[in-house]
Image (cartoon, rainbow, N blue to C red; front, side):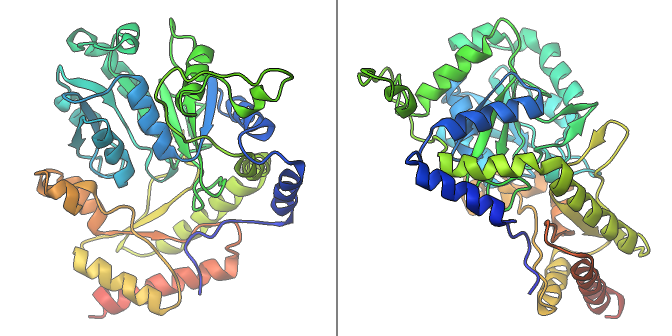
Length: 404
């Protein structure tokens, strides 16, 4: 069986995790703090906070910014449910908009149509590791600054809609020569097991707020907010006589552990030299194979201003129905090859349908989804296995739509 996206766990990772286990320090400590600094150096943002998931990072930032009942957050209909769920947790309203037909990313024109006086945050999603058009999005929130109605102190200080990038897929992606994490106000990465860079679970908040914000001060406040509102973490309390602490707010519990960070540090060290190069090679092999077929719509992942981090190879089959796509997937699995679909759009999920959201309002999103098949991409997928994937897709498409 060719699996979809297994993690690359080698002896180097095992040794580093073992060292942490033997060190006596397995929760948030020196490895986590080092990982935060290395991410900041890599991405070029101002400060980084590592947490136990990207979902926690997105919600913490919404709460830090004061998003609440009556507020609206604009996001693409084409995303994973986590992007919308965190908005619901805050009591705010997710405002879905349609995406572009070319690259799956949020449509700038549709964002602008959706902005109201209740809009507090725009959450673009870098689908498949391909960055959104951040210059246009950043300009949009400045253009509509006069309509912004601030309520929290943070909102007054920013004076406009916050751009909070769901960069779960895009660690290492570039836009106009800059890396994801440094492209807008705040970006949130995922280090889940299937991501290019994994810590098993985990995520990071890349702070890049403009003046007059002090990003270091925001980082420190978020450290408190994500550890029960405690004004000292366990590392600080190890200093002689420094045991006393205070709870300054009713915070949350979503810190990263040093075990996770140890994996992440190894992954980061070889990210550009091994991981990204290998994934790019697989993408190119898929392109070379499928470009010969009229039924194949290849994903966009490189352009004049953008370079993907090669997270998802999102192949679309031209002119098929959702049912035909599902039949093709079944045939591929019968070849012992695992594939996936990214994503079932959030407005199609029962919870959101019951709230009144209707996928018919997002025709491009549905069209992309109904024809999309995500193919395996991972470091240990060698050329022979890639050929097996390619052959399975071609055979399956031929069986379902070509030779029907």
